[in-house]
Figure 1 (spheres, helix red, strand yellow):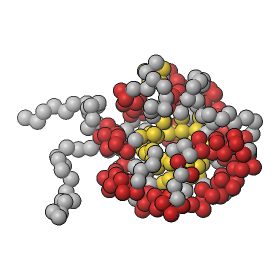
Figure 2 (cartoon, rainbow, N blue to C red; figure 1 turned 45 degrees about the horizontal axis):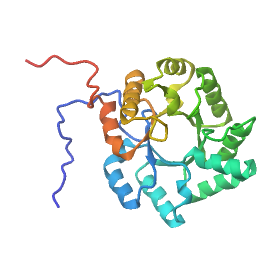
Figure 3 (cartoon, one colour; figure 1 turned 120 degrees about the vertical axis):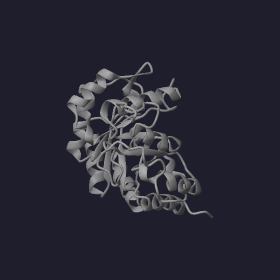
Length: 273
């Protein structure tokens, strides 16, 4: 097999210094969704994408469907590539709604035993009333897990003030980062500019991960996903934190971050004479 040169192709084309390229990153995080990648495909994807992926989300309750050996193999492969793993919030919502708050600690302990780095605490489908959100976050932290809080709804519009209050509640309880539900960031297929402006002014966006939308949101088209991603990178810069990126879109997302996708560079240099 021919050896691949370590030299970067087209090295005469500079990449923007505003994009953090070395892992572990503190900003510019990209979260990839894992809907059930077989180990072979996961290995192939990571061979190319690992430098551009920071977090891998085992979506909904898919982590319940693997054998333990297979699941551990997937988690270990992510760890070998410096990608942190976490369980999507809807699995916890299911446990909470069907078994009650008392089931949370055994659930978190199992996640830790299996090797997950973090857990997501959300209320997309099942409302968290009273102190339930704070209790879940604190219990997960006590079990040795990082917590990704999530705010917003897939079906109802939430005001910026409510989202900010929910995010602060998550942080106060011990969450490391907070994800903002992607469905809140669009209005009739257009980026919700007013909401995003208010969030920028009222939140520490370095600790916020903006979710992209997908086919799980009714009426979503591929162009909506792309337009939202393009808008977020344009408004918040190349190092905005992005979530819910599909594996096949990671490489293009990285190109978009550094100005090599259809957005083009922010300023055109005069052609050299």
